[in-house]
Picture 1 (cartoon, rainbow, N blue to C red):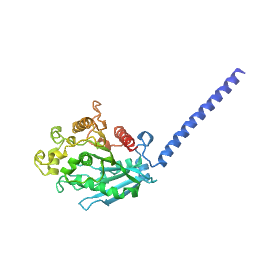
Picture 2 (picture 1 turned 135 degrees about the horizontal axis):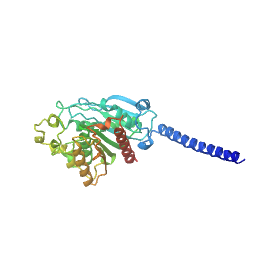
Picture 3 (picture 1 turned 135 degrees about the vertical axis):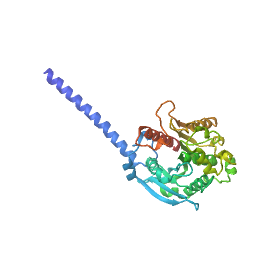
Picture 4 (picture 1 turned 180 degrees about the horizontal axis):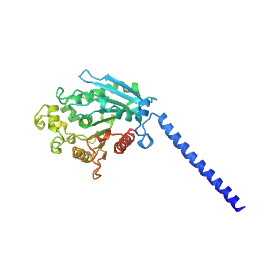
Length: 327
């Protein structure tokens, strides 16, 4: 009798335990399904970070829209296939030392951002030395003007705009954000901002260069050639408007919140640290991811290696930043 009673109790406990596990699993499946059915911005912790095959099925891609009459003024738009309205808009600017690169190299990353509930515009711009400074800054502003007119067609809400980029694209992005939020710089550059400061909710800056007085000392390969090609001056420090490129000198409290990240083995790491310190001194909210002291040896543009843990964790932080500043 004792053994029978004990067995019955054990069997009941097992059934109860099994039911609890089933309920938890069902809830997890429901939560995942709910996320995939909702095109609104989502925290990274609630999203499946990077499954390229899934992303390609669930993100619409519109290629090669002409946003200006200037050379190489094409952009791609990525947005959730299930649709959605009033989604925040991200303008993405590729890197390449101002002399190379293309939007196509950033398509997968842009689609990953769109998959989390954003309308992403990924732009090309005319390259140096054929196109000199401030060409890309002007084109990025024109791209924002284009989005003011057309983003709604893809579900975009231009009252919530983000600007992002990597390397040279991060410098351009940071300067565009400065133009949008610093009237003196906009007047100095003779640019009429396409969006107002209150529309600009954040900047995502990956491994960029932000101080032209200290960037040479970083020893970044070919930095002199890149900036000389971009400014048309040798040395680049002799360019009459070189200070305009130093975002650290043009920050105001109206500058948008920033997510800034760089690898610990990137020669440009000190540039991101400089900008983060300048942002904090200007009372601008900044979320930094620098890996200082980790000895991970993360190199330039590690952020795009989404098959690595560090690349995925950085994407997660970027998505969390976007979510926090979209709501």
